[in-house]
Image 1 (cartoon, rainbow, N blue to C red):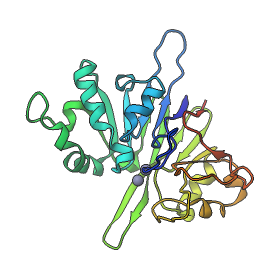
Image 2 (image 1 turned 30 degrees about the vertical axis):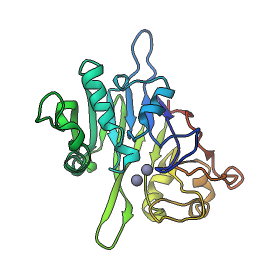
Image 3 (image 1 turned 180 degrees about the horizontal axis):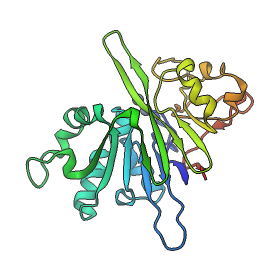
Image 4 (image 1 turned 60 degrees about the vertical axis):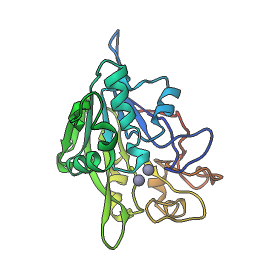
Length: 259
Ligand SMILES: [Zn+2]
Ligand SMILES: [Zn+2]
């Protein structure tokens, strides 16, 4: 099993050589089997980042959605319509927390997808929808996932959650924070038990309060930083993460062997 970062940028990253933080989890088949692919988030520039990896929308069997910001879902209309019209109705399983299904359709996708070649399309017209109860997690090709609701945007009126993933692959476990505030108390059990951590990391002078900032992450215990890779960063000059005890910043198109 291999995890490849199609991009490692933040939502607003304007670097010429990076894309939003979407990932491809891929089986490594033996013989003449075809690889199976799970796309983890499908942002508004997935069309370009996946093309750069040589992948088309029908190369995926499933897509997981962590939350409803457009760097995580803005490419779903493209994926839906391209598969429906260009790739002979190829069906992709759309896996997400059940509480996101209705707002994903009503507030994000319905405007572009409801009327295509007929006038009453639904999310299920394009995707095989799997509505998760986060506490149940899910399995995909031998990897079992815990789905962990994490606060992402916290206001006085409302908290927007993202759904982080803790994956148990054959040889390695990994914690993929998705977009989350710095929350060391809540994350520490996952930080401790993971073999490898993929951590949302904000850079630059502004602390948005909706992502963990590098200045906060650098305060984590050494043994946690020693297995932590950083992604979802803006196009600022990067600090020397290795010197600060991290594994480093993930580069776009970098892959990780998960056994
Ligand atoms: Zn994001
Ligand atoms: Zn977000």
